[in-house]
Image (cartoon, rainbow, N blue to C red):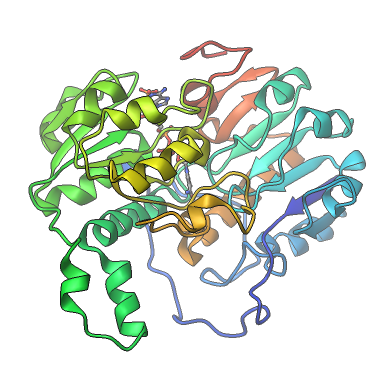
Length: 393
Ligand code: NDP
């Protein structure tokens, strides 16, 4: 029998919801490109309910306990006395989320001799030391596509909010004011602006597709060029590197995974190549940007705004400079955890568990690491010390 250790974010401060703003979720037939939504044998939760917090438990408890397995759910993830650290040594499976990551470091993996499977209930497995997972023979899987459109929508919202100066204008309303000039002195239209994405995979392309009807000029950079039919359909301009792309852009959005090639990419040098007054949107991973370079660029006006929902560490300390830097539109890491996304990543987590517990193969598109190497989407997205870029094991 397996012990499943699941780390989720805390319930709302007022307690687990007893009612919701809406009664149902729209039916999504499939993902762009043809990937199917999760296909577990069944689910024991109501789509649209809060599943990603501790009491929601990803809707897994009945399924696991009826089969005789043990499920431990906690939000207490950091430090040697944490529940996570105490429960880890005899866990077979760890489930964590990028929004509230249980950092599965090499030291922690070494303390967990039974650990065989690490599931990311969402997308982005950089909180797992992939080199250590490869060396330890772990399988790492995530629920690919479950929240890609959720993140893309959040980014489009942030781009519009930053360029149009929505948050400061809303603040004038809350404060009882009617200060039009203050609201509009930093407010522009996105129409005609040039927007570029670093990475044009599931999220990057979805952002571009959603911005096209705003009559923006669309740019991208990635290691591999998109098929010509997509470039033509969206009228995309390709740039071989971020350094080539950013001087052409009014808005830059980051949609690449965190791995050795992208860590620290947006430093003083790259930000210095951007047009004065560029908006930078990062819902990928915080460490792709140099924390203090972003603060300096906002203070000096090189960046007109920075928005995103990813931080390091998570949660960030109360004095993290991104909480107080000028002209930011940060949220906690929530873009990929809408109630809509939760229904999909909870179902996908169950699908992965069903397969693993039955000894059946996990979908190739969910795999990051398997059999001592990067695998599936992991082989396309990540680089490690064990596998050079683009290496498919
Ligand atoms: P995909 O794998 O579909 O796309 C990633 C893109 O990044 C690809 O176009 C890839 O192209 C590009 N890329 C990778 N390395 C580089 C590099 N060194 N330079 C330039 N481009 C690069 O991923 P998704 O779109 O699904 O997700 C992207 C990231 O978003 C995730 O890895 C995760 O970190 C983050 N995310 C955040 C969420 C949130 O809640 N905020 C939720 C979900 C994901 P190529 O290989 O050609 O370079």
